[in-house]
Image (tube, rainbow, N blue to C red; front, top):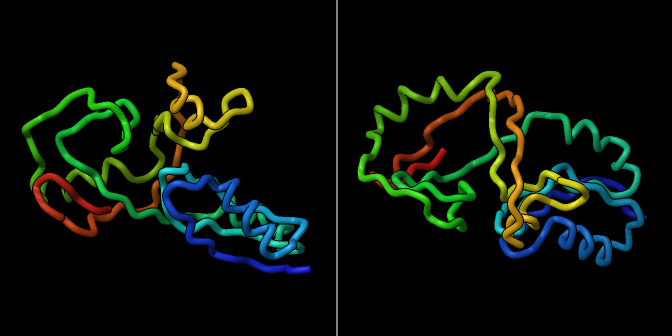
Length: 162
């Protein structure tokens, strides 16, 4: 029986649940848990606990996390990601200085409305599953704490990495 942690690099195109199922099959572990759910269209590290390590899962789930993401400027989609339908376009683009000056208002305790393509459960289903079925629903804003937000790279006038 395995016990311990695996940092699973989840690829785009597979759900977190399916990735865990495959890992369970490979390791033969009976108890497996993961700290967070990634949308099937997202890639990234999924912290996975096996066996006795699942008892420490609450520490991983409730701890600080770090994310890296790109923003495409000038396009608004219905899903707030690159997979959604384009709702609006704008020719205005922020400069690197504009971006750096505005970062402070996105840190601390803020109200954040999750995108419809998120892993939040509504009546037992993930919101991304409902969104892909074109079911209309609304997600409530929630308070989140953003410790730091840094501009990592001003890729070009249309895209920045944070």
